[in-house]
Length: 327
Image 1 (cartoon, rainbow, N blue to C red):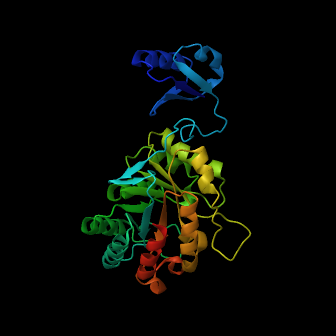
Image 2 (cartoon, rainbow, N blue to C red):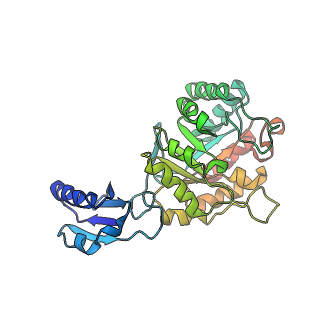
């Protein structure tokens, strides 16, 4: 349930109605808009009579929220959420490009890539230190050593960094080194990890699971926001379908749908969607055309010898050309 207060409602009136609502057992989240203040009610609202609330002269309207996600619902928060990552704003209408290797392999490799993608226009650097791989025999990442390389690379280039936490044992460690903590597709419904992500003071990049619905993605975001962290960036990275030509099928419709349903920013990962570097540019253009807030793209200085996902990684020069067409 959402209570919309009329413009110029006094602090005293606002406090009074909040106390009234909380006495019924609900928690109230306040969103201050340009004209209206909105009270979002979370909890069992069956004990609240909306007609009684509408009797207050300063209440504009009372709305029922039809979706199970509340805090990430646009009705609760009509204005777009803008996530500030060390001065880089995601969700304010200017597309933000995140670029870098799938896995951190060495300090020299990372700094070389970071300098190049920054010169091409990327605003954040991505790089995996902990890698959840399908095979236990595949490269699992450098762990904390890789995180130290990411931190050093930020000191050299100034690029804020994004890296994935794969479990409860790693999330605090990752948060010590990076500017954005990524929750990957395989962990989108790891609810204990989501709750923990909601209690750290870092923006969270939440990727859609490859078999998850849009509602399930937004409910996963709800877990994070409900624990106190409003700085969530959603990511569409392709879903699993019957098609085998590409690694996944990019659900391009998810971007405008989420823009309609939620106030959270959403970016697109065309690299994981396609699994083929040649398709990254057209999928990037399509993502920008439907309103994505940015892209996260895999870039490598030597993809033929990459330890992870070389087939979908752009070379430095190819990424530079791509940036001239999407920004």
